[in-house]
Every structure is written in structure tokens, then in C-alpha cells.
Amino acid sequence: MADFPRSLLEFQQRFADEAGCAAYLAQTRWPDGFVCPECGHGKAWQLDTKAWTYECAQCRRQTSVTAGTVMHGSKLSLTVWFWGAYLMATHSNGMSARQLWRQLGLGSYKSAWLLCAKLRRAMVAPDRSPLSGLIEVDETAVTYRTRNDPLDGGQGRSHDGKMLVAGAVEIVGNRPGRVRLASIKDYAADSLHAFIQANIAEGATAKTDGWSSYPGAPGVTHEPHVVGNIAAHIVLPWIHRIFANAKTWSLGVYHGLRRKHLQAYLDEFVFRFNRRRSPHAAFRTLLSIGTAIKPATYNMLIAPEAKG
Ligand SMILES: [Zn+2]
Image (cartoon, rainbow, N blue to C red; front, side, top):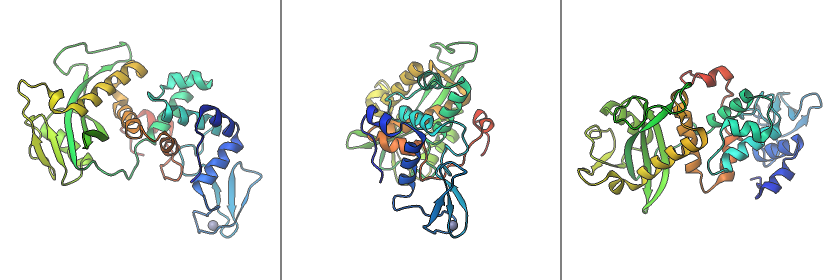
């Protein structure tokens, strides 16, 4: 596996130009030399006419070093992609599009936003495995920001101006393991059971606050802790801490989340949390090197409900 720069300075030196980035991509994708994705042949020529593209000596298929990654077909340079992924993966709080726009000196806010959105889309591994073992499960409400209003919702108890989020975290020897967060439409059994089914492995034990919507969730053992007068953060300390961190993060980096893109932002938080000890693996995943995430267009990204 290709090694990774250990400092900002090393990163800057190694990925100073397109050639440095392309060499890293090629080395990471084909550690034992080029392999044609079409026929499996190992001999190819690098084309002079197309940047960082190989033509298979046997079947003549042309393969770009960025094919199958989030960078495929992008007008941005590889150095910009590498910096964007590095900052988003290694900065403990991540980066908003506005911050990236300024830090990378990009031409427009829209191209910074698109860069962020594409990287964020690579944050959910298509084959990720569900949480297992002992899991804390709970739900919370997050205030959202509208286009006109900097902050909406206030301190009210109703769900007006609030988005609902279900969360789950594996407990591994009193420490948090992996996390999942999902936007839900209400606190009804259907919504919470669907969350559990999508994110928690069969046979796991779900520890909850005893809310009436949890019992009967398919495939999991339910361990209710009826909270009553005991504060929920004592019974479910980790998921409460994660909710609090997510809220602080959303206010600090984004000044509140927008309803339309809530799930994408939750995915970003989860991605970083789950890779908090391996930012280099996070970088590789973000550029989707060696994985097959289909490139997304701008229109697909601004309409998150669109299938693509
Ligand atoms: Zn071939």
C-alpha cells in the first residue's frame, strides 16, 4: 500500500503538482503495476494525448488514473482535489465549502460547494457493515437554519423548526465504537424500526431509554432502561455525547444545518467520527481510490432525494 505523508509540509512537497498526485493514484490503485479493468492484462502504454491515461496493450481500452473515483471528469486539478480531501479528512472539525473556497483560492463558491458535496458523497461506503454487539440507540432534535433566517427554531419543545435525528453507537468495552446517524420524519415505531433495521445487525442488543416506539424492532434484542427521573445522559452516555458533539460541530462549522442536506451532513460527521484514529485511510476513502462510486453531477447533488 502506498505510504502517506505524515505532515502538512510532506503533503505539500509530495503533491505539489499533477504528476505527484497522479503517481500516488496509480501506485494506490495498482500497487503491483497497471491491470486493465476490462481484460486483466498487465501491459499498457501511457497516452501522450490524454493526461494520466493508459491504453491496454491487449484490448486497447483506455483507463484514466481517476476513472471510478470522485475526481472522474472533473475540471478541477488533482492538486485541488487532494488538498480538499486532505483538509476534510484530517481537520478534526472538517471544512465547510466557504472555508475551502478561501483556503484553496477557488474561482467560485459554487465550485467549492461542488467539491465538498462530491467528497461528502464518498463518505458512505456502499458496502459498510451494520453496527453489532451492544449498541446505545436514541433520538434527538436538531435546530435547522433557513435561507432567510440565520438560526431558526429557538428553545421550544415542539418540533417546529427542528429536524429529528436517530442515532446509534456501538459500545466496545465502555468506549464508543462506530456511529450511525439518520434523519427521521418522526419518533413513531415505523421510523425508529426502519433506522434500526438499516443500521444494526441482526442479533445485536439495543440499549434505549425505554421509549414506547422501540420494542418490537426486528432482529435485535431490546434492552430498555426506563429513564423516569434519571437523566437520559446517565443511562445512554455515549450517544448523548455524540449528539452534543454533532450539534456543536454543526453550529461551529456550518452555523446550523440546512434541512435539505441534513443527511449528507450527518454522514460527514459520522465519517469523521468513525475514522478519528485513521485520517489517512479517510483521505483514501474520500477520493474513493480503489472503490467504485459513480460520478455525480451538480444536479444530482443539489437534489439529494434524486437517485443516481
Ligand atoms: Zn485490456
